[in-house]
Image (cartoon, rainbow over all chains, first blue to last red; front, side):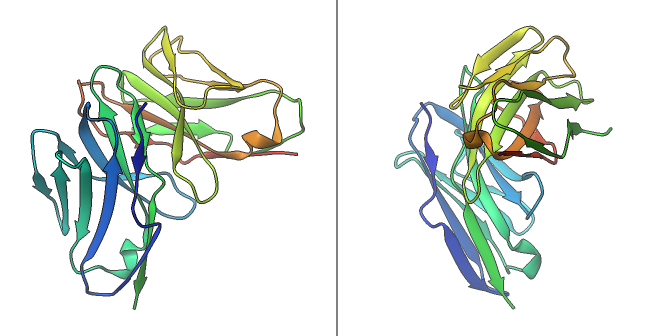
Length: 112
Length: 114
């Protein structure tokens, strides 16, 4: 089955610095990936997504990079703000079954 | 649109009791999902549905049942509750276009089994 995992459970960054959160996936059939942000006591919220035919996608202050060769994706947050403090999850969707599986998550702590 | 609505938000059960977590969405999404999230962990897929009348097991289906009689509703049934089922449960829905479409989540239902 699909396995999605993250390299770093906790990431502390200084306010204003850039943050990079990494994610590895195991199922090479995964063809759609989503990053979510979860604040304490709330459900996950969509940040950005990327399809497997793309290497990079940019949003507002966020960029997702996908490396299919090593089955790795990352979320880059520019000029990290205190409001970015949360747990970030990557999710992978494998074609055909529509299962959406999640990694453990990375807790981002922004130091003022 | 209310989005995805879950009830109850909190519940305490005794071992062996049964209950149903309700989930409804008003976005006419085909796909619906139930996840559980244990403290400090990611989301584990329990069951999912690609449309009314169709359900499939996820990663951790044991001890749970679901039904999908309508597009809007996807209740999760716990039979004979056990302490291992203490968790936060999230329901989510997707539009259903092949391999695209974000998940929309409910606010979660916190269940404690004592």
